[in-house]
Image (cartoon, rainbow over all chains, first blue to last red; front, side, top):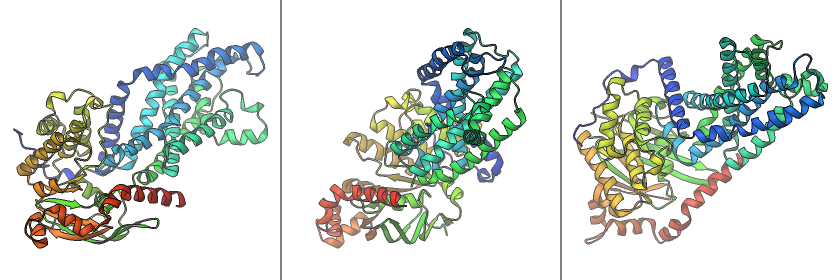
Length: 270
Length: 268
């Protein structure tokens, strides 16, 4: 070794807590981006399922006219719902990645660095959001080709991106919370599969809430996916939406989920 | 006076019905290569996981350079470089990205980062392969990459859990040479667990022999061998301490602990 490794200069430990948290969050986000760069093919294959929902389910139900969506064509109504659904399907299995990293020793090693747990969780949540965005671009292009009247207002598109990232972050953290509780990949797979469809069907993604029986409406009101879809629909298609409430719910739910997931992360490495 | 690198008092840890660590008192002087030896399932890894803050210390105390591990986890983590038992580099990142991640997590200043990362990669002989994805590395290369990850923050205490397990003899020697070299240049303390007695004999200044959660013997390899009688090897000391159960526990010990852990988890 030609150059000796120098000892850390005095004052390193004095970095202020908030600054350190932000620096760690950006580090973990960066490293997740570096990882994503290496599996671009996955971004495409994962877009197949939402594409099928739009082309087959969407086109068929548009012709049936079974679901009353007012003046909005059904395909237009459906597209933001499918966008949110595809993001949910990516995020809800992120816990599996955490368990895999636990089994590979990667998580343990990260937990022994001076990094707040919340930064590790936020990095994953961000990665889920970025994946969702990459997929959203493909789904939106397809929707435009199918004739969905999407907004071209850059501010609204940006708002939709934020809603998508917040929603993905919440479901990613929910997945990490489940991982922290069940601790095994198989059980997480089972629970993930058991809850995705109910979350999807008990939301306004496929049909307006007004059509639901009373008990399902209640479920829909506590389901963050509904708020995500409401925001996406309002911003992309221009249907009436409660944007303030939507973003408020998504932000609070995301922050809570990051907090709970960070609290449970240590359990995985024991 | 410098406090010892590690001081454990009355350390105990239980997984369900299995007592993994059963009253360990251990003092590791700063600047030494210290070997924690024992058969599989002796409690070495559990002890390491408590020192590294991965497991909570419920009974007993641990200090790292005088800092209480259960009270000031972040301060302790800042002093430690840790290489776990599994080959744990992230295969989807390049060698350089793997090391840079740890440089950032330990706040190596931006202006020094690139140099420091290169120095660490050079120290383990991986500079030429630094930009390949680490998924293409051999086992020995990954282990050396992990050493670079642990070294890039210039830790005062380097903790290696079975660093040479599963490696071929050439790779084993190479890993140890890197550890020795870095230690000679930086004077850091090295705590290593192993069940290869030949490695302990050659590279460790002090060793502690652990069996069934307790420290059964401690001293330099030469002292322990002399105590047993002329011509003894560390292998003989090991057999004497662990008794005839060595062979049995080597086959099932770790599996038993893991199974007990899983049961404990299931039962909460």
